[in-house]
Image (cartoon, rainbow, N blue to C red; front, side, top):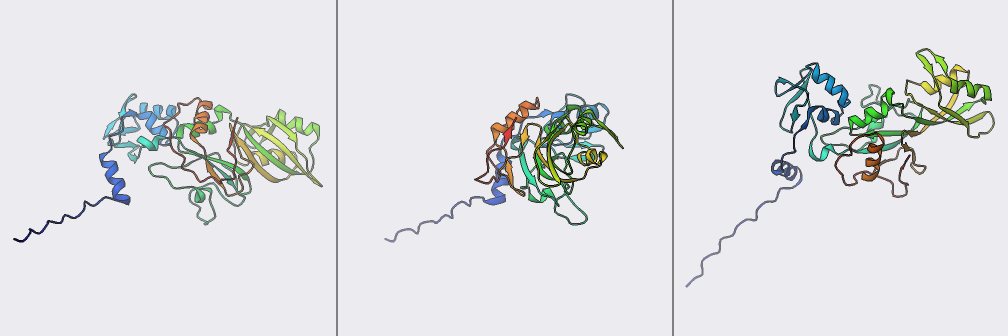
Length: 297
């Protein structure tokens, strides 16, 4: 008597790559709804206070209806501002990320340059469901610390003039400042777009005709540092930003290198800014293994 032929069953296909990601997204529990103004601020649209104003003015719609203060939204809601849809971030993408980059001279701070020049965004890792927000700008001929974050609230706190966040620079001048000129800079000078003032200015050495100074300023107007010294007849031959608020440029971070801050440091920055720390994340940066951790003050 012959044995029956066994039935062969093909193994169940296991989704991989993008298919696996879509499946995981489909079966994942839906993220809890959160207040509209907070979701908009987290997406980098503006500060929470600005979003509250826009909602009160009727500029924000949720699912085709005018939003009200206190409205909550989730991943399936359609949000528009002035008739244009905006995409919010929920779940893991709400995690605040901070990346620091040592900008080189010859790079510009923009996402798209019509002239095809190198931009600081060219060197940044790509994100899904979020975007890097540049905190402050550095002009074409200035190098040093650039900070990027996924949090609109944090970016607003660091950049808005009312918070008076310190920026520290190393400045090389052609010539030497007298004590009277240093006092004049800290007292304040009048520029074309209004008064400007250094919080401090200290000598930091130099050779020949060049002299280095360490300065602190609490504003970020266009070419402000250069214009302040030009007001006294001095030419800035080198300008490097070494600190922005609580974050200092690591000495070992070379030009063109970047590093993403770890959870505990991100939480400390948020605490410094008076913001609620978001969910924790795993390290996803590209630090140089020989680079020291960034300092926070």
